[in-house]
Length: 518
Image (cartoon, rainbow, N blue to C red):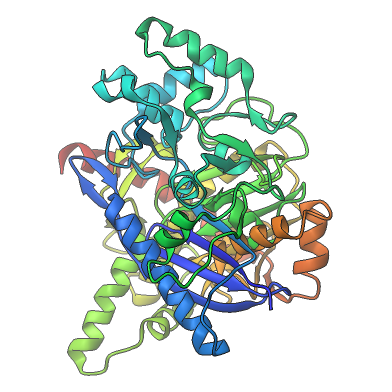
């Protein structure tokens, strides 16, 4: 039996999936972790990364052996995915020059604004080039010693293969991509180099960025050193194909079969983002809309929000503690189902309750920090259903601000697929997203596997030699006959969400004041 391994570094969990030749899950394992705010920077340490990767792999290998009776000695192909963007600069000896600056940071506003104006192209704060230029603007000494700039996925790829390569979708969150060449935009590279030429760093931007590859290519082989890094027991043998690493946006597109034009997906977990594959370019630059690509290089409009389910999870923890105190503890999945399904009994507009789910800054609403809050008038209908429904609405509210821009641009969407923790309770997350987007939303039976499964599919696609386009491969080899649960937008929910958004816009003034004063 041939096996294909996909590993994805999410914000709160590292997940490993092994699929078989039919793209079915053969084994899975994970490792929980959490980023830390250190010296004003959201980060994970290199030790966190190494320990987490090894634990996730050890768990998937253990699950594989339990299910097959054989140790996991070989895999045909490996795929690595991680949270996109961020900043990991290395010197010529491979030393990390600063702590890893993740996508969650909102510390590059000046660089983001100046580069967006220079390129005539939206450069969000979390993009790698924004972090690099902000470090230059800040006069950080490490910049002159840079030999390479990588993302987390690119860093793991280099450890496993010895090659600094990223997939085109991952690269599109580092620097703008020219979809005609599936490489970094040469004109923008030249503009950046001219912008910093007086600094005398001794490097050109393209020289320090990783090589760009596309889905279906072979981006290296698992070396002996890479195999031992992944599996210190020595059981895993080197030699496996390693496909181009992709970001969580790209694996989300694959996991939901939404890489064709006029399809889209929404990934909702710690952060939330929507990806819409475009027929034609947008009419102008929008600061709220990122332009990235599919793993094959097609242009994609991306609405990315730093905050989604963290506040919802915090409230769930409170109710879990109450259940423990009552002497009747409730399993976490059961607790979520109980409260989320009950939220569907709430008022369509949450009864006048409004909440802000910001644990970190949110560029779309121009806030550098977050202050979770709950607001209600004395006559609001404050009950349990409305409280949880508010948390579900709040998780999507900032995303809706960006999506409404695309709707105003008359972007055509044939189907939307949802995946991530927000959609685990059937019939809840997709129903509310359908109301927010005014578009039918489907969740596939593989939604719970998420990006790690999507990355394993990309690994298999490379191992199979990319026999056809990625779109056709997914349709014919992976998703044929796969069932999905679809929810149509309920007019009352649509109206309720619009009413909620009016209150949400007012609430943001209070959030802004809280950030300044609390």
